View (cartoon, rainbow, N blue to C red):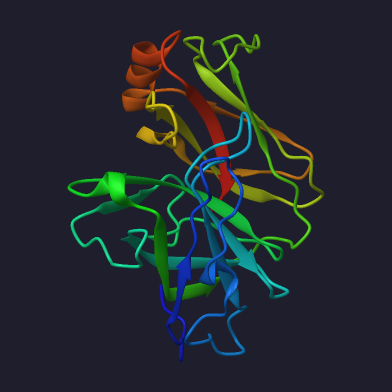
Length: 242
């Protein structure tokens, strides 16, 4: 996955304060090296704390262009003084670090998790755009909702041992998505919650215009659902992909 003449873009991203509000920082600044005209400009903001019932540790990705793209990002953890934390491993739920997330004009987001020595010191992240490939997704496409169900199609909750995920495409064009089952930790008071496991459910699914697709829960996903149903915080999410 390449894009001729792509320049690297680096941007430091600010964390939120403990009350969930954005802390002032270079997060809104422009990239040090801008991408060429052929690649829509991307901006980034790290949000350590989400609002009530929203996911913590999200990377907000702004797309100021007119077309959708699938970026490949290098994400580096940074402490409160701006110092890199090289021993901290940064992982993503939706694959923006491997070209798996399609970002529409206007933007999207990914979910980050930090592990390894120094993970508790993470206050910001730096993002480098390594590649940015064009993606075939309409700018006005509406998100596809994931609905857990049993084998017969009866609706279930994300906390139940569901056997399939039903996907309804509200758009007038086909869209391609992936489904993931996210398991969250139980954080200490005052600290962000993060994912402890990200398990794909099925593979890339293309849903016809106005249509519905079913993704069976098998293999590792089925084992995870059995293990975590009626247990810790979980969610079932879809994201545009390719």
